[in-house]
Length: 380
Image (cartoon, rainbow, N blue to C red; front, side, top):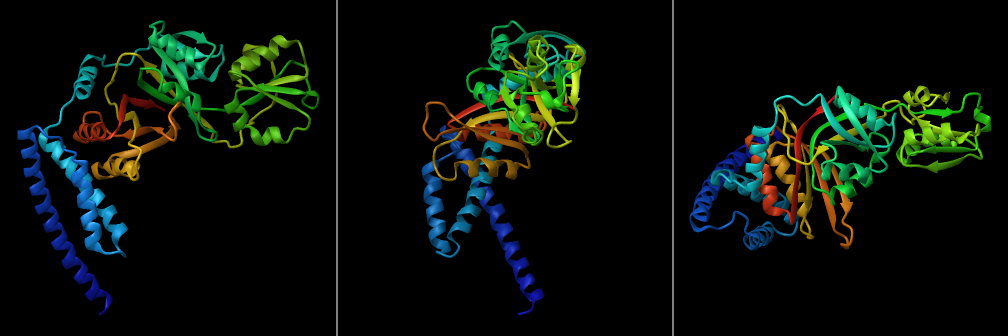
């Protein structure tokens, strides 16, 4: 047979497949009605296992794995369709709707905000980008920021989440497991580190350099080119600059921001230190109550999945089947639990859409633990 004849045969088979798929979803709708009348849940793990085993056997050894992948997707679509037909509702969806209705229509320009570090820290620069007139309370640690928001000392907290070249700030993800909070906004800040020292200092005389571990990673190529220089990790790039200014030494330097040069009366010894020019850090703004401002298109979630094969694949298939764009997926080990992970998701979908509600209902039904972190807009 020629290629055109083969394609015609495939087209004919596809027509039959679509007709059978529509018929199957029709029966699935009847199943949903039965489950609603009898108070049964949409997900029936035992039934799905039996179905997958049966179709795998029908497909034969050569196409067994491909058939399981196909039917996992079909089952996901079926659950989605059933949830939609049942008009799934939950306390979480009610909370989100209340958050939308109760939140002001405009993000505040003034607020009490917690940031880690001291004046001149990148968190402060991100805060200035989010608020026109913030009253900043500086904390010694990232956990201090979470604490300040949790205890009501500040309405908001601004924290770095990830860098385009050095990756995620793992400590923030670990603290997310510990505290209850909501993300209300995010922003990206261009990071251009410089090397700062006391006025009159010379690069060839520098013996020690201080900075935050993320900044050190971002400037690793520059640091590798220095000989006999000790690199020390500290809590914050601005704190590093302040420490150099107060040290009274001209043989120490800090990797920090250009704004810290004027702030702490330091001299720039080297500019443009990051390994790449396109160096950005993403910051999140957190609050304790749920605040959802108009136009929210981004949602953050944390899930703990069943410890079994295919659990993550089953979750990822839902984003695909509902047409939801997955922006970020991060995994972190759960302290005290062997080989179990928390998965962090950033998704792009309107908080007002049916796909959003449908996705949340499905994820809640299948995850061992589900935490909604908020829906928000990212400021560019």
